[in-house]
Image (cartoon, rainbow, N blue to C red; front, side, top):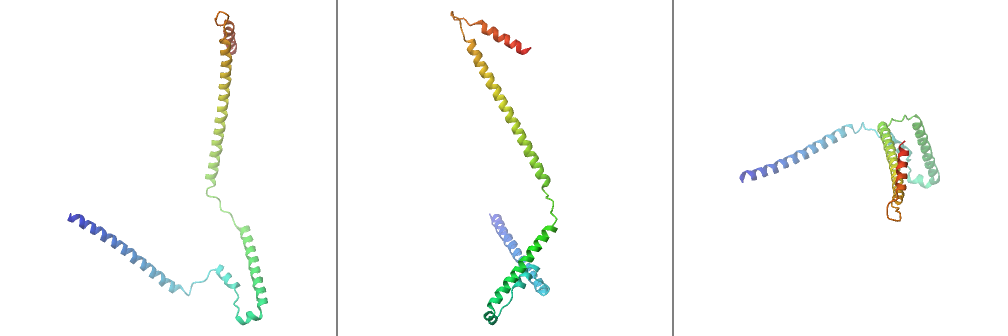
Length: 177
C-alpha cells in the first residue's frame, strides 16, 4: 500500500516537473526572440507591397482640406487609377513570362484515367455478354415451350403423336451436320 501511494505521488511530481520545464523553455524562447527583435529593429525594412500602399496615402492637413477639397479628391482618384493600371500591366507581364510548373500528379492522373477507361470497357463488355446470354435463354425457353406444346398433342386414344417427336429428332440431326 505504501509503494502504490509513493508511485502515484512520483507520477504526479514528474508530470508537474515536465509542465514547469515546458513553461520555462517557452519563456526563454520569447525572451530571446524579443532580444533579437530589438537588435534588428533598425535594420528591418517594410516589404515592397506595404511601401506601395503607404506611397499612395497622401497626408492632408485640416486647413488644406477646407481649401482644396475638390482638387485633392481628384488627385487621389488619379493616383488610385495609375497604381491600379500599373498593377494590371505587371500582372499581365508576369503571366506572360511565367513558366508553368509541371503537374507532379500528371502520371497518376493519366494512370487513373486509363484504369477508369479500362474498367468502363470491362463493364460494358460484361453487360453486352449478359444481354446476349439473356437473349439466348429467352430464345431457348420460347423454343422449348413451342416444342412442349407439340409433344403434348395426343391422338384420339390418348397416345402421344410420334410424328412430331420424329420431326424434332430429324431437325436436331440436321443442325448437327
